[in-house]
Image (cartoon, rainbow, N blue to C red; front, side, top):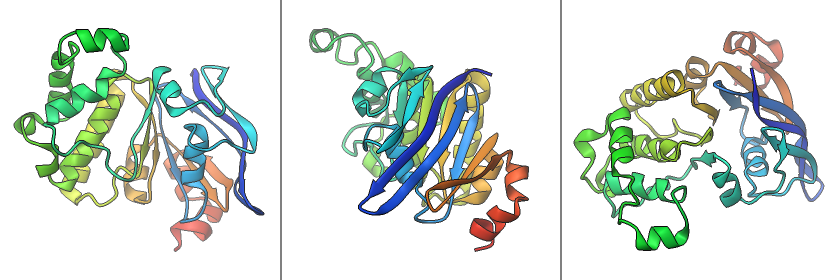
Length: 247
């Protein structure tokens, strides 16, 4: 299976404290990788080093074998890497449809063609397909700010996939979502992986969500890789039970 993204020996220190130390892993094409760990284990710092929000002190990040260490998020976005954030990034005054169109516009043509071209940059049909896929049709014309938190999380995920990104990194997608909407989100993520071959990485505290969604799990503790493997392997690892599952 082809490696899409690889981290090799990533290290990030803040003063004398190593938030991430010597972390190496790869993301294979078509898989769903979960990254878990206790609070303070380095998950967010690792994400931010990969996505260009932080420059690692050591190590490298490669995308399709190309060194992209320290590349700006906008440049990574153009290379087909998108993300969601713990804090929602939807535009509350815009409709669901317009949020999706806006999310896809960066990847269509040049700035000049967007200025002079149609208002929707030719993305309405693509937005409608994504609305249908994420089962948001009944909300398409509603302002995003009027949606429930769980519905906004669904929209946020749909926006990340709108551009046809080959790799999507999801930061706490289950956070604050009720059980019904969580089941919808998980079902849609499974579907986009199965039907479109989408590759993504999930940072998440919700253990049940990760174990039932992801094909492989990486466990961090105190900035280092504690374990990695299938959900069953990780769940049964005594070190993981001590560091995380047993809390």
